[in-house]
Image (cartoon, rainbow, N blue to C red; front, side):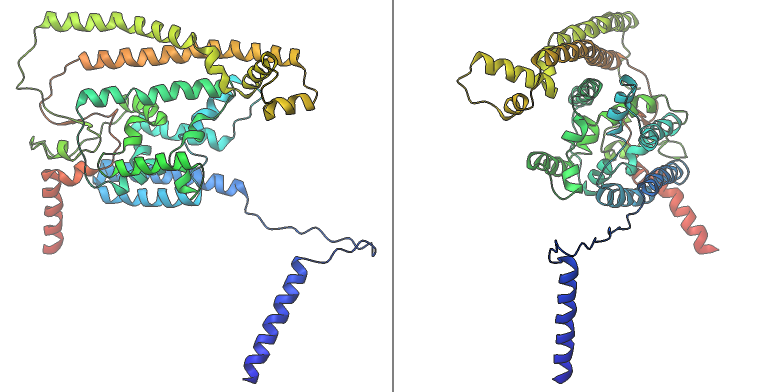
Length: 429
C-alpha cells in the first residue's frame, strides 16, 4: 500500500511539473525571456524524393509482373502499398492526377514556379505509358488501387454507353485546364472524391460522392478511372502509342473468351471473323463522313463554350466580387455581402478592379475557345474511332483502355497450364 502511494504521489508530481512547463504563469516584471522552442520536423525534401523513388520502383515492379511474370498478385501488392502510403500516409497529395493543374499554371504564368517533384510526378507515368501502357493506373495510383481492392463483381456496360461516358474525363480535363490557366481554382483538388476518405475528413458532399463511387466499385470496375479521371484519359492517348503491347498469354490464344469476361474495364476486344464482311465503299463513305464532322465538331465546341466565357469567369474570385459590387450598386437596399463590405472597408478601387476583371474575362474567352475545341475534337474523334472496323483473329488488349490490373492473367487457361507445369517441375526436382 505504501509503495502504491509513493508511485501515485510521484506520478501526480511529475504531471504537475509537466503542466507547469506546458502552461507557465505569465510574468511581466522579471524581464526573463523564454527561449524559442524548436521542434524537429522531418524534411519535406526527403518525403518528396521518397515519393518519386517509390513511384518509379512500384511502376517498375508492375511492368515486371505484367510483362514477364503475368502475375496479378504482385500488382495487388502494389495496390495495397499505394493505398497505405500515397493514400492514407501522404493524404493523397500531391498526386499525379492533380499535377495537371500545376503544369498548366506553369505553362501560362511565368511567375509560377513549378516544383521539380510535381513535374516528375506528372511526367514519369506518361513516360511509362509511352513505353509499356497505363502502368500507373494498375495499382500505383491510390485512387485506382482503392477501387480495385474492393471490386468483387463486374456488371458489363454496352460499348455504346461506355463510349459515351468516356467523353466525361475529357470534359473534366477541359474545364480543369480552363480554370487552372485563368488562376481561378484547382478543380481536381476541389472535386477529388477520395481525398476526404484518405484524410478521414473534409467536405461532406465530396466525401459522400467518394463513398458512392466506392459502392459502385464493388460491382463496376473502376468507375472513377473509366468515366471521370482526366489524367487517365491523358495516359490513354500515350498508352495507345506504347512501344510494347501487353499480351494476355505468352502462348497462343485459344479464343476461350475467359479473359474478355474477366476484364473489369472492357479493354479486351473479341475476334471479328464471323461477321459479314461490310461493303468497302460503304465503309469508306462512313469514314469520310466522320472525317468531315471532326473539324465541324471541333469548331462548334469552341464557339459554344467560348460564348459562355462570361458566365464561366464567375468562378474567379475577382470577377465574382465585381459582379457582387455591381449588384449592390443596382440594389442598395439588399443586404451587403461580406466580400463587398470587406472591399469597401479596405478602400478598394472600383476602376482598378474593373480593369483587372476585363483582363481576366479576355483570358477566359481565349481559353474557353480552346477548351471547347478540345471537347468537340474528342467527341468527333471517338465517333470516328467507333466507325472503324478492324478484323481480329484472337482476343486482343485495347491498350488505351487497359489499366493493367492483371485479372485476365489469372483467367487465361494457357497461363494456368504454364503455372501448373512449373509447379510440377519443382515437385519432381
